[in-house]
Length: 88
Image 1 (cartoon, rainbow, N blue to C red):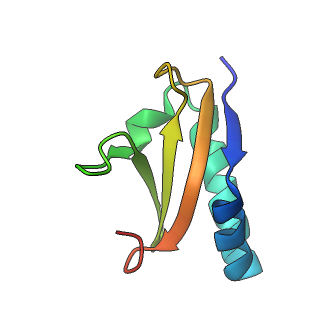
Image 2: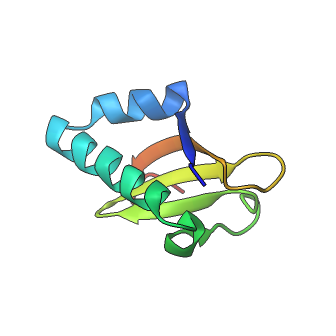
């Protein structure tokens, strides 16, 4: 099953603020996770009030994302990419 990755405008702005090498590393790792059979095995579910969101840990950065409305893993919507000290 192929998983589509969708970046919100906020996530794209967050990537633009990072250095080129860091942004490439994050995009590459998101692609790596999406190619796994179940990328949620590499993710952590967030606690309330963010209980419908998940996060990937990529170095010192956190990638916050959600799955599509049906709970299927066909679309990963990347909401934001922030340094760990700024994300929560």
